[in-house]
Amino acid sequence: MEQERRLTIKELAKQIGVSVATLDRVLNNRGNVKRQTYDKVMDKIKELNYMPNKSASFLSRMNDYSMAIVFPELPEYFWKQVEKGVQIAIDEFRDYGLNVTIIRSEKYDLDPQKKIVQQLIDSGKYDAIALSPNDPQEMADLIDRGVDQGIAICTFNSDSPLSKRLFYVGCDYRIAGRLAADALCKFLGGKTRVGLVMSYTNFQMQQKVTGFREVVAEYDHIEMVGPLKLSQEDYESPEAFADYFRQADGIYVSSARLDVVAKHLEEYPAENRPVLIGHDMTDETYQYMKKGIVTATICQDPVNQGYLTVKSMFDHLVTGDKVGMKENITKLELVTRENARYYI
Image 1 (cartoon, rainbow, N blue to C red):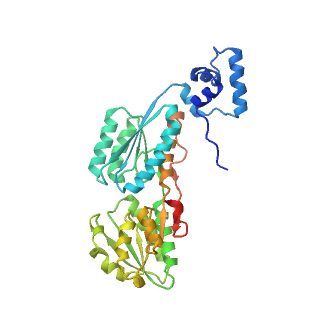
Image 2: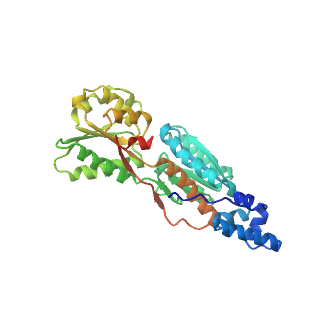
Image 3: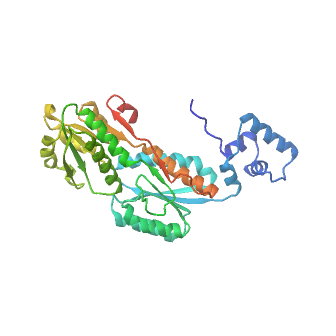
């Protein structure tokens, strides 16, 4: 059974018929409350089985905290799902004084993102920043500078593990690459040649490719062709894939362009099409799965990535405690045509 949502302080006060300030005085033993009112509040709390939590204590201190969350514009389908999770958390914690500003950095360009984060740090307006760094190494110094100035900074979706970031929320991309390789090699049956399509090399891509190569190496009868390294513009050209489709029995798309590769593969003779595996779910990918062009995709729980990022930072701001888990790893799920409809 799904756990019931905890009442906010405002909702509880409304149900009891008292002000938020009166409820705060009762919950935190501040006195200056009539005995009749105190008994009324406590009876209702027992009736509702309400347990005051740290959020109630946070509200009683009447503090407001400002948080900025920064992530790229593209791929739009993925970040829309992340933003959905962020918005769920905003709605949950807004009444407790948390204000969140969402900022999209241009594409995957490093310089615009660095400028945005620099401005956020220099503004002095933010108690916390959550960042999906376009380049973990290049952003590390900037993250460290913000932390040294007393700003709580975390990473999500893409990590900067050598920085002073507070924690990371997101997938283990090495495991994602391993999962893709294991599934692809099993789907091949008796065939032997696997291909890898990749884009520019960042921390996330490095981890996926490392995991993929590790597992492929464990299969003695499997050989790897390629990899095929492409710029973002190359993906739109059918000619970039023509030879590679002929060379490989199965292909792993480690970038966020699975649907684009599937579009080109649809034009290739059906009897010779390689097995195709990649990441994430879009409406286009779903259609290609139903046609049998995409064999499987690995979903990264994007809504939960957005939600957990805000919630974890909120918990830190409320308590002032260090975060116990430096890495909050979200789940990976292998999706095929049979269960794809649950991910749209």
